[in-house]
Image 1 (cartoon, rainbow, N blue to C red):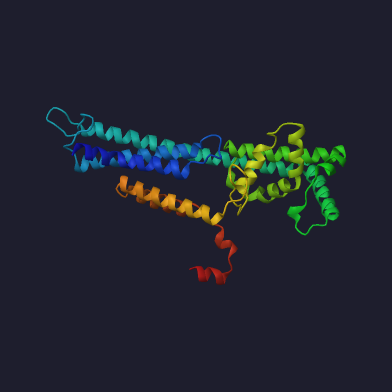
Image 2: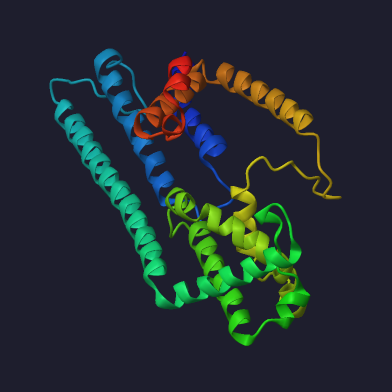
Length: 307
């Protein structure tokens, strides 16, 4: 029976760690995000706090690691227990404040970078030159979609030095933004809402130039920019890691769906339904704390139908 109680004791911790590993882990980021680390610690501390309260309220006669909390004639252990709970609460509050401060600092830094770029005379001048290049290419290539306009290596070599400088300046700036996001120095959602269309347009326009510069300079040049572009690109068909050919999206989703169902069933059984409770709680928290802009893009009729 003691083994069973010990198993019940560690189930919440295993569930939380498994959830963070599966759903909150993101290999895109080079460093583990501090906000996620602190959130994990907060939840684990909260579980510890609740379990101590349950232990004191309902299982006072049980021991953990040969330590008991039952008061005796010679020892009044409630005072020590209250001290431990107060310490946990204090650490919880400190970590919560630190997490909020880290998130706000990253967002403030992201806003500062965006504002500095928009107010920079050098940036504006380079953008004006790149816009003229794009406009001239659109006339010469006579394509229907703006996304299909590309600066070929031949056209790039025929540009004047000032125009080449503008192209490399913009690519370097976008590479800087991509590196900042991957190192979690810039807030991805904030930068994405402002720079997604700009990054996509410039990457598509200068993609042949990137390939050309990789041949004459370094194979990894603007690699971070390419990774970020692929991450933000919507409705991209999965590619085979060997031949780079497209994989049937429906087949891929079906396999992924089966794997997720099997994993959820296994974890639900092992954690005694704790896995489903954890998912429900985290989704509820996300729904309550994250504002969705989807409603802003719907007309009144569609909003009514959706309800």
